[in-house]
Image 1 (cartoon, rainbow, N blue to C red):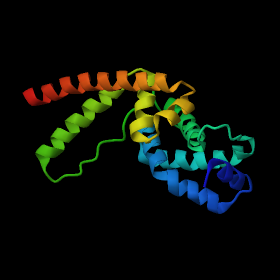
Image 2 (cartoon, helix red, strand yellow):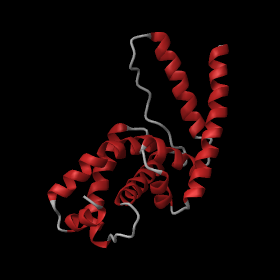
Image 3 (tube, helix red, strand yellow):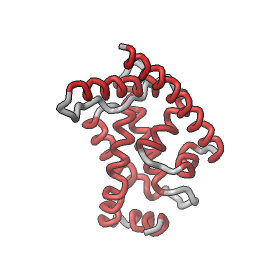
Length: 183
């Protein structure tokens, strides 16, 4: 189903179209919101609110060539940032979801926790634009084109932000890994 058909069906409040969106984008959208709010339960509420806002505002949506998914992510992003602003003293502090041990091996769990903490801290040292590009690209799984459309930037600008962010993360995580190895 292309975006024009999808939007037309949503404007008719077609339940099957809504189900298709939830099925197609739900998991990645939830991961993206969790990466911003660092609370899976709050993220579920925000994703549900995203779908409600989508339906409330679908009448105003115009197919412009930008993917429908970018519009959906923009709604989720705005709701997530509003939640972060309400719930945190430092609203620019976007983090990953809380660490959950997945291994029975205590050494492996410790090492993964150390790397997780270093990644979380490193993400918070990036500029807001760099962090948003990283989250959209690698947590939400959007393409360069979709990120550019969502952020209203050129693809070249998004590529540069991504490159700078990944270089910075590489330097910071390399230093963190060296500290863990020395400790």
